[in-house]
Length: 262
Image 1 (cartoon, helix red, strand yellow):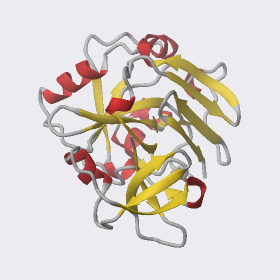
Image 2 (tube, rainbow, N blue to C red; image 1 turned 90 degrees about the horizontal axis):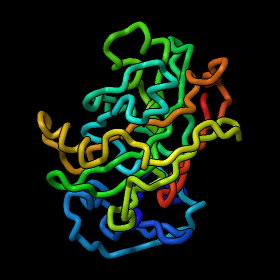
Image 3 (cartoon, rainbow, N blue to C red; image 1 turned 180 degrees about the vertical axis):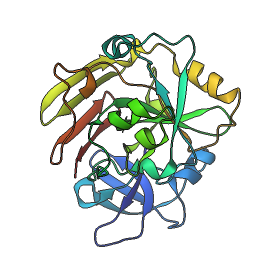
Image 4 (cartoon, rainbow, N blue to C red; image 1 turned 30 degrees about the vertical axis):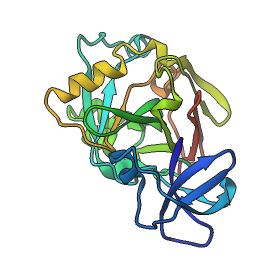
């Protein structure tokens, strides 16, 4: 099942629904959200209208997640390209809920940021308790200049729109093994990242267990599992994002997101 939040043609009212093939089927109850579905996986809402996928505007599946947890340095090749040391335990940081953004909308780079970087990542979407509801594609956008001079990464990682994700949530039963998915990122059509989630240092269950030691995970919370090598700061010379650049990230079984830098 692929759960989506979207704007129907000519409407400014978000709707929740399911994507099947190339159509989106809206839930009959307009107030029902994707978050409601994640909190109650047994719910089977009645469908109403449907539209072709290219007729609707996809929004972030949970438009304002309660919490977005990021994981740093979770691929060995990314550790090497940054010149860092491999962490002995997950390196957790937070992105603000306002960083969540639609999968295909432009991302506005703040004027204070001069070294904007992409990070293609597998996103884990939580269900009730410690269960995994599903998975999505995400870009953990990062201001490398702010990250380098500010010990806390709130501004570097949590700026408005710095977490485009989607294009929908592919529910867990559709993904037999989240640790066996190809992940690729292109910038302006050039392949920059080409890896597989089998290369994660800390697995999805390990990340959930580690975060849960201090934080109660809730339905709709997002965990960004880390990025492989090939980010802009790792290029020779470094290749950061500029206005007009287009980032595309694809993960096997989950679909793709694509956004321009404004």
